[in-house]
Length: 246
Ligand code: HPA
Image: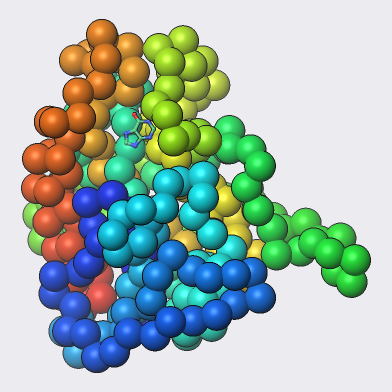
């Protein structure tokens, strides 16, 4: 069963034929909200809104461990994570849809592993390729089938938030090799890897990052909502196509 984590702009999957919702408890606390079970084109899918259904949980307060644990325990065999990002590169424009291939983690103070506590052996997971290659290819192939252009690679910088970055911070991220910036990609990806659940991300460019292009003198939030609404429709179409295999 596929799990979808929806971010800003995607608090539900319009084409999900909902069967039921479950409030799940985990050893790590409460997930962001009830987990929604249903079907897309007859195939089972489970959905969770990362920021809660009322969009009240900021990126640094999301209980990533509870979310990933709950989805895994619900029977998720793969997780597709949807999130909005800022674009550092001029050629990645607001509205563009991207399947990133790498991550640089700048977050701090988040509970970022299941492998901790006195009774837990020290464990290191391989994270050379943070996203699952097959799942990425399935997303890219689905986008091609439905004729939605996607960028098939980008380095995602995960920042702490909830504030946006300074222009100098974005320059630094670019020097580090980052193409896009968001606040929720980590530790989500690493936690999925720890539980051995294949994980890939769909990033939607909401805005140019601080100091870039039309965000040169500031980021204007009024424009972001419209951009996201349209692109999240495309994201839904890609997910539907991937799930139904058509
Ligand atoms: N920075 C960080 N996270 C974001 C941005 C941004 O500019 N836009 C959307 N999520």
